[in-house]
Length: 427
Ligand code: AMP
Ligand code: MG
Image (cartoon, rainbow, N blue to C red):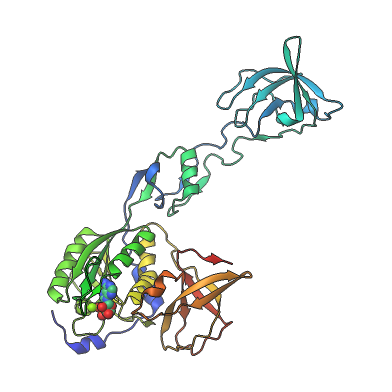
């Protein structure tokens, strides 16, 4: 499947946003499934969920005290208390079948149902219990307002209210809500199965000893981690040597087993860049080339195609470019497959802490570190930012966008950054 070399140079570069838009038009719609509430953390809700009941669904006491008629104790003071007969006691989880009528009170615990008749609860600390002729009574020593310490039915959530929209990522807060609303089984999107295939005859396994000219395969693990971070299920399809036929065979095999495929390496113009040939010759028979060059640095030969309705990405083998290529192009598709329609990047404005003078005729994406400082977002360009380098990826919590044509960006100037889903140091 060798193509002539000039074809590799003759590629037409598309703009980054155009590449992103093309990708979004080919996002595969995934089916939904039900998963147990025990195992739904980080999954994405597949349909809007509505409250089936009110919360609370009964008039709930906010504290331990006495359920009373407020009108009887409107003017109560320690010197002039209201005295009431205690006619019942309601532990949490129980209800009283008695009614609070004038002259009576019911002892009640936090979270229990306020008995009929009562319209307020007064805390124990503002009362004093006493016995008289075998009868338990209570002195109400403080004024009581109507509704005091009672959570009304639906105070927090009303029946039918929207709880969470489709695409919501399930965290501890969502789990608490789902549990309280009786969602033992939770409707979620299938996790997209994303294949990872690395190419390069120089690659050796992580456990192997280095040999001259050989390097360990880090992209496979980095990509799998990125996939998992955005909710996908990464499936490793191994490493292909720089052999066109073998790569095609492995791609075809992988495509049958995944919803989307990421191939690293081999997209450039080198003699053994087999993925460049793969993308250049694509077309027809349920295959469409979306682009095989992007006007950006790093990762200009980044490519994408659609094969049998599934997206295939060809990312640069250079670890820095591979990382950025995923964040710029793959992430949005992966999120959209899980119902996040507007997965456009939430760009932030940040102030550069240092000068940056590496001009570029194309948009440049560099790894940066943001910090909050005096209510301002500051961003520094990380050292060792070359596309071939990976050491700075671990420090990166954003990607700084340097627009095409910029010459020097001076310290103090504002730039746009794409936040990465990692912790941001606050100081
Ligand atoms: P390529 O995109 O195949 O031209 O590779 C560009 C550079 O990235 C070369 O130095 C490769 O050795 C390196 N590289 C390719 N694949 C990987 C990988 N899976 N892990 C780490 N480095 C890689
Ligand atoms: Mg290669």
